[in-house]
Amino acid sequence: MLVRLMYASRAADSVDQDELLAILKQSKSGNATSGITGVLCFSGGIFLQVLEGGRMPVNALYNRIAADTRHRDVVLLSYEEIGERRFAGWSMGQSTSRG
Ligand SMILES: Cc1cc2nc3c(=O)[nH]c(=O)nc-3n(C[C@H](O)[C@H](O)[C@H](O)COP(=O)(O)O)c2cc1C
Image (cartoon, rainbow, N blue to C red; front, side, top):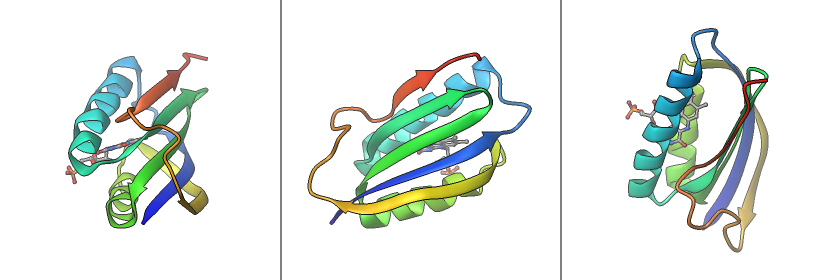
């Protein structure tokens, strides 16, 4: 079963451009091996991320992400069963702004 999960969070003060690139790099390699796709948006100190894939891998990843100290105030915005992926081909797309 495929699911799509979306959450928002507040970046830790330590998150700068280098840290953001490290998170994206880690996401792309981790997701490629677990069949997860999605997109990570970052603007004004706020993350918005969509994860899609099998229910178990998405749930497990969300639990790991929620425990990551590089952000806080993680809020689950939606969780739904899906028929097909919206971000197929993107192990983790990105949309970032320094603003
Ligand atoms: C905002 C944010 C988004 C993240 N997105 C992903 C992701 O999509 N995939 C991933 O594997 N790790 C992601 N991570 C990193 C995970 O929190 C975690 O560090 C990583 O999965 C390695 O976990 P492990 O050391 O327990 O294996 C993200 C971290 C943050 C702060």
